[in-house]
Length: 443
Image 1: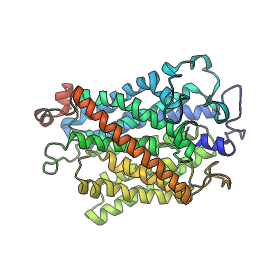
Image 2: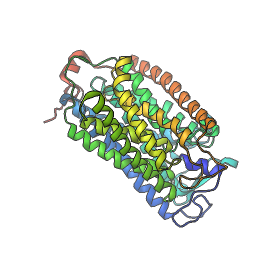
Image 3: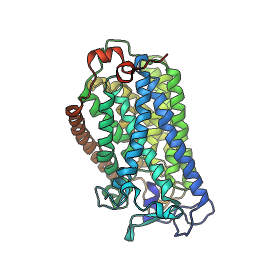
């Protein structure tokens, strides 16, 4: 959803493939828009299973590969159920400025309108769509899934499986869903502020990155961090995972147009360009400072670019995307190396260094490089474009998300530590989580 809501409220509707207004009130769904959203939903799910699962599993040590895969896989199942029970209602129920109500608890009312387009919000701020609510629910559910899965990268090699599941359950309902309401529901205060987030710079990446950073600090460093060899077990798996992420990100960003039109096409183009530019800028920085361009650097750079373009994908043109990609790659490299070293935290797989840092960079650059509120292909003088005023709005959204997520995540980690304990024992950590948490070995 994201930006199209603002376009519908502040300017003219987006265009569907037929050229008819995408948000006109219609008795039936638009099959082209619906088909695109079904495809987007499927490939966004692919970003978590197997994308994130393989990306993270390839970067841990052999004794923790199965555990890392299991974390993404089971988090996918857990969050999907939570989303249907209450998460969707908290995020997209009417509510007020800060949280949705429970009017959609257990998806109340969805079954009676399964074949008709749905309307989000009510009154003057209501926005009609061209897709069934069932598709929108599932699409948004895949965003909740990947956000939770990204957090696991910061906690790899040492968190109890039980603790992870309890934390993710609480965090999805009490942190992710409220922030999604702030940003993407017409009643949300960040939406009303006019801050832009096309596909999840704040909701997904800053949210997950900050939660991961807090978790890494609360749980503490891995045994042997800084002295033992913690090289990736299988970078081949990580390359496959990163490749799936790159492809799936087209559903993530272009799917956020919620229709098969020009905005989706431009979002896909700028997403691809930013990923490519960030791959090259990260490699160049690595080449200069470390002497060799690594495969790990290349795939990390691609993800950094994809993260950075996410909040801007529906608001920038290709030249802006290249700038965002280059800057995202450089800041991602800094976040995963110099920043982590300077602050001394152990973010195992750079969840904050890449997702948190590049999410912030992308959100702020959106305020500088945005090209009209209506679409990425048409300048709209009455709409939103890059300016100091817009940059300030972006800063408010970033700061609010950062502070709220940091404080709430800290409290939740402490609660989980009291309930089940966060960290495995030293003996279990040395033996590996595959055996101690799951009773299995890889090969």
